[in-house]
Image 1 (cartoon, rainbow, N blue to C red):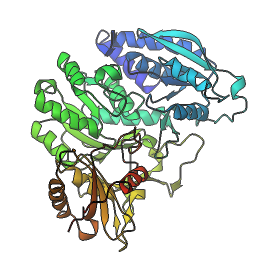
Image 2: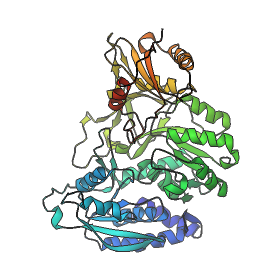
Image 3: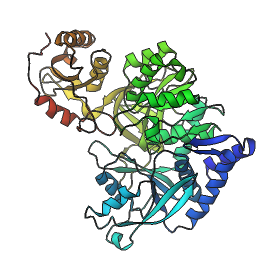
Image 4: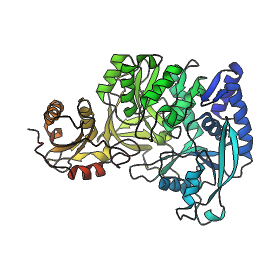
Amino acid sequence: MNWLMTALDRWAGLQPDKPALCGGEATVSYGDLRRQIETLTDWLNDQKTDRLALLLDNCPAWAVIDIACMNAGKTLIPIPAFFSPTQIAGLLADAHVELLLTDQPDRILALTTQGDASMEWAVTGTRLVADNHINCLTRSSAAGLTELRQPIPAGTAKITYTSGSTGDPKGVCLTSESLRQVATELTTAMKVDTGYHHLCLLPLAVLLENVAGLYVALFAGATCRLESLGKLGWRGMTDFDFSRLAGIMLDEPVESLILVPELLVGLLALAEQQPNAVKSLRLVAVGGAAVPASQLASALEMGLPVYQGYGLSECGSVVTVNRPGENRPGSVGKPLPHHRLTITEDHQIWIDHRGVNPYLGLKQPVKDGWWATGDRGHFDADGYLYIEGRHDNLLMTSFGRNVSPEWIELLLLDEPVIQQAVVIGGGQRQLEALLIVAAECRDKQIEQALNQVNQQLPDYAQIGHWRRSDQRLTLTNHRLTRGGVPNRAAVTEFYNGLPDPDCSIN
């Protein structure tokens, strides 16, 4: 029996009738959850494959399938619904998946029509899981004979795929022990208890929500609400309707949320407009990208319990986090107990390799027992970590000075008139910036904002030239990656195509 099932056994005995999962029309008590997992585990044990994929909207059935796979010793491969058909096909081929559970069978069946002989899928039945009818799809055994089946490292409970900066999926093989360490240590660090009602706002295929949201809630004996992404307010993965979220939070109090920075902006607006919707919040965790200091300050002023953290899929999600009683805004907190971090002379963050999981089919590049995260940062005297940006994003000016663009971009985003910002200009005498502002914003307002920022920077890191646009950076126009960070090559190309007015800062 795995660690999560042991916890569920305990809660099923202590509070069998308490809701463990709810969402849509389904409410699953701790007693019912234990029974449903056992039933699905028996079915999984009858399946010959050792791995299966899951493409499913947020719902209680997602959690039941996830935990049952862990209980049956099967490797689960969640498919992010926002992956493109090409990325999904690449994921399925890379993991050599032959069994797939989904509520979106047409998306998988359509892969066959794209001319890929290895993607011949057929619906072979349905399963009723937590009141959801789930389609079972299998891949033709003949179609996969020519493929090389990648061996999965022993003990792999889950393979989480990240799109990466190039869009090519890369699978991280997560052990049950790695997931246990993160979930249990987070439960203690964030002081989550049985009284919490957690609302999963991010897709469960996103590891952060899966581990820090679902697993933590169930390990703590709390209630986890799993509504469909559309009901929550998602419109694709680049737009969100906060009026829908407000309705859900007013309908039933929510104690905890996990957000990405863009959603934090909306939550702050919601707190101003409908304070009753957020008054029950005890924990708002934010991660996935850097958070401007102005947003953290606004949250503090409103009394919102916002805690920023830092995580990596290779490490099972959360690595460091601010927490109740140990919160230093601007930092990403202190490491979880099982992680050891060090900072090299060039400011790179390295992690003890024992806390790092391998890629499927690839070796992790480890040096002297340490693994390079690719991020830059530093610790303060009290052990709080500060992220300075990606090491490979460094810009070098023609005077030989290295500058992290994320450092400047965060300062730019603190200016109210600037909605998005990307710093470019490596190899040049002065740095430049693409600034996304409202169409009605005057150039003089932008210049004033830039002067404010430049006063906070050394001369070599100041913005010397800028161009403006009212076109937001999005996934659709390929100027944002699926991780929500700027696609710097695409942004630079867009910047160079913009009119070149006299936008120099003197």
